[in-house]
Each structure stands twice: as C-alpha cells, then as structure tokens.
Amino acid sequence: MDDVRKYGEYQYMPFIINETIDKPGGGTLKIGSLDRSKGSIAPGFFVGETEKGLLQMLVGAVLFADVANNAVNYKVKKGHQVKVGMFLAGDAEGSKAYAVTKVVTTDAEFDTITLGTTLGVTLKTGQSLYEVKAEDAVGDAGELQVKPLGIAKNEIDLSVNHPVTGVSLSGYYTVATMVFGAPKAITKHLPMMQFKYPNV
Image (cartoon, rainbow, N blue to C red; front, side, top):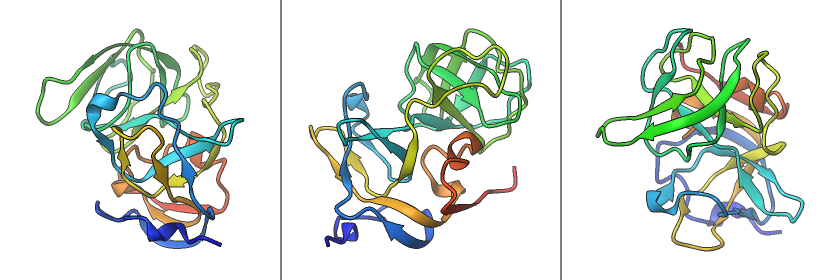
C-alpha cells in the first residue's frame, strides 16, 4: 500500500495536528473550471469524489474582515477560486446563498467578492464563504457541489493537467491554517474529523 505522505507536503503552515487515516495513493484533482492563472492552490482544502473517481475541490474563501448582516461586499483572503456566477453561502446559522456578481482582485492584501443579495448573517474575520449548487433564499438549504470526502494535503500546481494530492480522511485539524477554512456545512459530513476553530 502506498503512503501518500511521500509527496512534498507541509510547505505551508501545517493544518494537520494529528492524522489517523489517509487515502491510499491519494487522488487526482479535477482541474476543469479552476482558474489556472492563480498558479497554485495551497494545501488544506476539502475535496469530494466525482463519479469518475477524480477529486473535486469544494470551493470557498476565508473572510479578511467582519461583515454585517446586510452586507453584499465581502473582503476575503487571496488564493481562493471563487468566480462570478457561483452561488455562495456563509458559515453561520440561517445563511442564505446568492450568486457572485463581481470579484475585485486589485487590492494587494485581499479580494472583494460582491453578491447580488446579502446573505443575511453576521460573519467574523476568519469565518468562511462556501460554494453551493443554487440560490437559497430561505437559509440553511444550500446543497454542496459534491459530498465531502477529506482534505487535500498537497499544494496544487495549476500548470499541471492531472495534479495528484494526498487526502487526509481522519484526524484533528487546525482551521486557522486551512486555505478555505472549515464551514460547518462541510464538516458535518466528516464525522471522523475533528477541528480546532479560532476564536471568532
């Protein structure tokens, strides 16, 4: 059995506190609609598995600043894969989900994501936005793009057509160093994982 940890891992701030199970052989990430101009994606993002057996990223973004419950502009950390047309929800009870209408990347420190309508919840710095399949005007009803499987452990080189990554399936993780955070809508599907959240 291959040990996926033979790949070059942990070049970023470590997010794994203790790992108990990983996916033998890792997996190949579906590049498809990802923005290759970003160059790479840091490790520590959630993945699911497609019908063809490829890994699929669960897209998200970590907030750079607090937002009020009537906000439509959300400052987020750089390095995300959010695009215009995606539907985003917030990691807070009662959050609705609406389409991204604009992504501004001109600031050196953060990007600003604009939604067509407010998510209707207060969010703190360090909390996350995450992609769902469709608009949710009710709240807490957004469906994820793919069922979560685990966490990608390797930096993804977007110049490669079939990048491979190790996948952590069980353990204890620190959310503060995970590239897109750890929204509860995702982690609830992963009972073998425990997460240490920052005080937000």
